[in-house]
Image 1 (cartoon, rainbow, N blue to C red):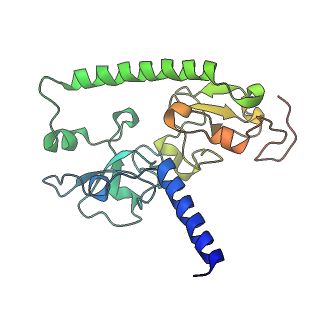
Image 2 (cartoon, rainbow, N blue to C red):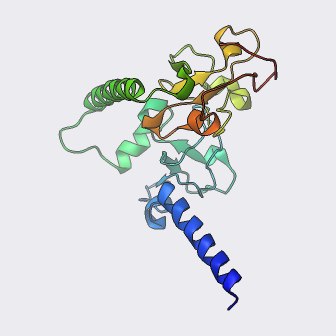
Image 3 (spheres, rainbow, N blue to C red):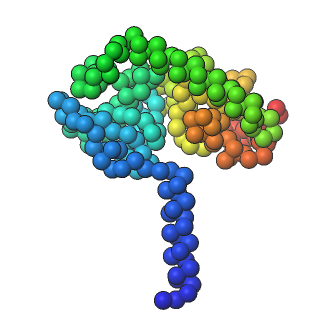
Length: 227
């Protein structure tokens, strides 16, 4: 075997290993072949190769991301976003009746308990994110904003395909996520472009895109901006 070819193959194998380490995939049976309900639907965990990744949920308007739990209709077909729905209660689009009927909550848990637990988890997560931001601020002291319910960047069902997306990962923005907003967007005069900067959610888009934290021109209008 040619030495150059062998070295190339080894480098390719190394890159594959690095990618798998950075983006570990659940076993196929766990990711795409979850328990089947009486109506033929099944649960699944989204991974980078799932056909619905980056499509928008027709109920909440958010894109499907790696790690999202979803429910697929029994007649789900590749490319049909209407046959997939998020199971994350925070997004408010899951069919809880179906999920509860086929996958009952643990003994002693009630719907009210589940809501309370979700709220408590969200509060703890927000506190952890704030602490992490203090310990690991973005380079250049870029201002990080935690998206409130009224933020223009947060996707809503009525926005359709026009909902803003992260300029780097191309996923929609969800309530409570931390982002760096384009200086234009701070004044809402030209654009509402933003980039994720939420390490807790595994979204380090800003650091990947602008490692020195310097943004001199609006990525949408290309006009020079000053922070």
